[in-house]
Image 1 (cartoon, rainbow, N blue to C red):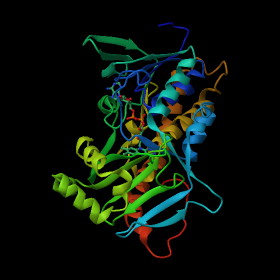
Image 2: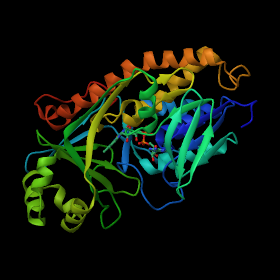
Image 3: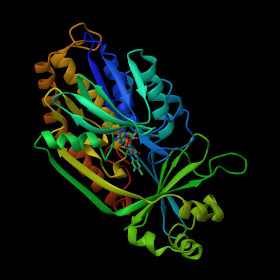
Image 4: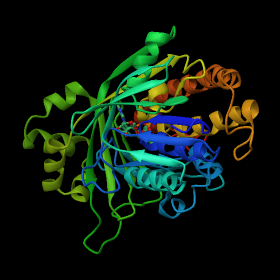
Length: 397
Ligand code: FAD
């Protein structure tokens, strides 16, 4: 480790860790990203959850401030409102997100992650290390232990450790040993499964691609977001008990005939049955914790700090905003990106910056977790109320 450089270890090369590497390297810091999985730019195995996501203004600003928006923006599909599929026939009703064409954007998760890793790697200060699973951290000595793919345990040192290792964060778990961290984790009774709705025989979208499609059914719902290959990714959200009750092909088709009949010809019976039984069913939970940091040694961001249920479409967006907010606070305490004074920050100033980050970011992140929980009721039920035409904000579904 070069003593003249400031070394950061980012644990997790997912959406948020990769963007944060871009931000931190532009301070002149030496950044190593340690990712448990293989490099998703070269492996065929699809990692993570949800094939596509909604990217909103919140996330776009963080990407643009880091200078990595370009190259992604071409792949976004704007969704300017919700398209409700109501009743047995799936009667269509459009609800715009705003009066001036405001939109959220459907984007491919894998593509965003690949793009951000490549953008990070463009900076020679960034090293990406894959198949490195963090096992333990000594925050006072700033020593990390990893398990490699061959089972070997290796150690590394860093001046600052960033936990971007997702909802089941090991960095957060280790942080709990050294801080008086308040922590809550709540599973909801609903789960999800993803299905695909292919393009038409002529290669076109089978539904309007500029809407987020929702089949609100009071106690459960189905949604669909468009993909650039003209397909849609469909997600069914419902209680585990409903999933458990669908045991056979006949059960599934009867369920779809009753609640989502208009979607059957669009998905196709064969594909519907195949995807529903083959694809994993995912749990949904919300995590809140505080503080997010320890002295000048560590900070957690993204889902590691605030995993949320996906009904506000803000988990990734909020994680991207974490990077932006952290950057602004670092600028305030230790100088702007690219400035000489930021390159080797003092431990005192860095600790002050991380303390301010924890204190100011936590209430905002928890508010978004709560909004996400509330929005499930809105999406599966309130949207169907008479007179409900325009949403109040363009953040969220
Ligand atoms: P992750 O994406 O979980 O990445 C964490 C990374 O850390 C992974 O690469 C993982 O391999 C790595 N890692 C984990 N453990 C270790 C370890 N021990 N050592 C080393 N590396 C490790 N958000 C939106 O903004 N809009 C949406 O529309 C949206 N839709 C969603 C739909 C669904 C069904 C779900 C489940 C989530 C959705 N989200 C959405 C939320 C979004 O997926 C998350 O908020 C986002 O992935 C968080 O990014 P992250 O980088 O913090 O964590």
